[in-house]
Amino acid sequence: MSDLSNEYLVTNPDSCLIVSQQVYQLAGKYNLPSQQAIALNNIADVYCNMGDYVTGIRICLKAVRIYENQKNVMGLAGVYNDLGATYIEAADYSNGLRYLRMAERGLSNQIKTQDKEQLKAIIELNIGECFLYTHQIDSAAYYLQNTNRTEGQYHYLNFVGNIERDLGEVEIARQHKAEALKHLNVAVKLSKSNNDVKMLSMTYLSTSKLYHQFKQQDSAEYYAQKALEVARSGKYEQDALNAGIVLYSDYDEDKNLPEAYKYYKLATIAKDSLYSQDRVKKMISMDFEEKQRLQDLAEAQDRYQNQIRTDLLVAGLVILLIIGVVLWRSNTNKKRANMVINDTLNELRSTQNQLIQSEKMASLGELTAGIAHEIQNPLNFVNNFSDVNREMIDELKEELKAGNTDEALAIADDIQQNEEKINHHGKRADFIVKGMLQHSRTGTGERQPTNVNILADEFLKLSYHGLRAKDKSFNAELITDFDEKLPKVNIVQQDIGRVMLNLFNNAFYAVNEKMKTAGADYKPEVTVTTAVENNWVTITVKDNGIGIPDAIRDKIMQPFFTTKPTGQGTGLGLSLSYDIVVKGHGGQLAVTSEEGAYTQFTVSLPA
Image (cartoon, rainbow, N blue to C red):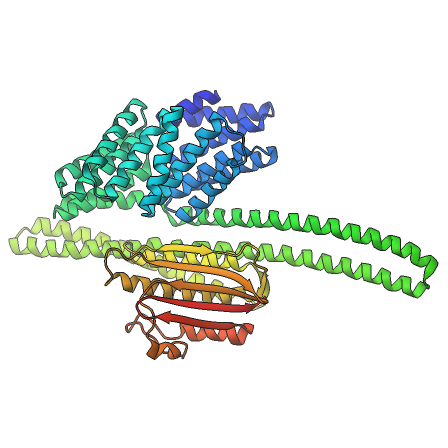
């Protein structure tokens, strides 16, 4: 039955789900945990292929626990690969690459077998796709070509279509039409022969992208339609959404407004289903919880080793105390006993503080992970329906001028419905903002030992998704270099979080402004680095944006001084950040910059 579920995975997802659930139940009945984990893998793959990433990730993490308990390195590498592929499909490339690297490391010390080489090839395929979607074309080509050679050696025909499609995307990026078509045609044939509906839909959409690039609109729309039909037939919501967006854009360019509006509505409905704020919030919350779990495991290991050392120390002290009964007076013995008791009490207090810190960090993670996506959907609805109404009002005027009263009334009804939706989602956004403000006022202002790496990572995502919600065309590469040995820092989490959010927002603003005037070769980057130096923990935020002119660099931390246009900045962000860091925490806030090249802010806190 397990083999049967593997056969159904690509060709018949519904049957795969049913059979895999039966395998899981039987494996539990006969105490076969490895078979349970395999069944969970297939169930997770089905949900991920259908676009339900939250359920897929949750089931994958359940399989991780089983393989960890079994100490099954190959199985664990396979699940990490599935997690990486799922995050890539959900466009979370940072987490996707992180899990794929974990899978790659897990295989490095394994004996060479055909199963290992097959899994290694799949991991390299997914890494290649991650680089492809983040526009690192040369790196993508390296991994995909390496995978292709491995596939040819071991004849894993189920994945060759996937590789050929990705190599076609590489050639599209390089604007090599003939080479791209060659790869895509091979991918279509292989997908059909393997009955791989999902890959067939993705290949048709890549073909549409190629023809659109070379201004062949009829062919581009034809293949996008085929991609949509195939995705719908297989119930692949994410691929149907991708095809709908392409068709909307193509018809919009052709000025075919009825068709464009039809596919715009289709894409909006699919997007709301796939990326509702509840799903995205759960997905990011799971990612935060998994990071926290791994951190807790590492801390538990450290505590265990410390406990062994403490036990040995206590044993040595007991021996000394026995000798002391003979050699020293009772007063000396009492002092030594008090020292042992104090050490034990200190250790208990330290353990208690760590448990309290874990709980508070989990609470912070749920807040920060949800904010951006909670408010993104209602704002998207308001903006999108406002754009549609603007176009429909123009149509209404034309119909009134032509004397088409019935058509004008129909358009007016549509505008009224859209206005009701705008009003509804506007009130919803207002409710979310008020809720967040109420939450922010509940802070105690107490300092707590904090993992600065986790805090910086969460606020970086919050800032980036916040800007993406306002400007879908904006993209930037997020580069993080966090010192894994960084000690916890005693800070007010909410205050330092506001400092980080302000610095990240300024960095994204700077690279976004530069994109408006820079050439096509410009690649916006924001780099966040943490380190510990001479009893100071430093957080460095660097961007390759517009920079700060020398003439105003000394003024940027003055209250109400801003370089942003009227209405886009209050001039208080850096001033408040300076007060929080320097006056509130006894730290330092420094800036270096070169106009037109970069800006770097460094926050230094006492370790």
